Length: 174
Image (cartoon, rainbow, N blue to C red):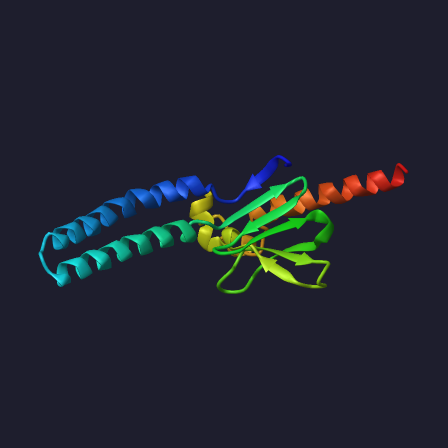
């Protein structure tokens, strides 16, 4: 495995911060469910099951909601979305762009060679996720920098250029 050159979001930090908020809420809901379980009736059991399912749902949202990542290394890109993970070797990357659409502004977009023109947007690199990445969200508010490449896009482009240069050097060395 190649050394990671850039990591957009440190998932354990985000999960820890959200866990600090969600753990007491989950314990409170689960405690309420246990209190309902002490009632000697079907309603108490159903209330407990409802509370338990709510805590499991909170856990699922916590785990899946904090899964997004963007990793750049010498071998390629790893884009982790909520449910799917894309591992893209540099050989498959045609170009790296930056999104300007409303919902994914500032996101790194990887355009693939095969299938030709397929675009994968890295959700962890959007402007909406800047705070999670530890970046200043006001750095690109200025109109002169609005379309400037964001740090994740810059890191991916730089790594892709290094890979292209190394590939060309190997070809010329033959």
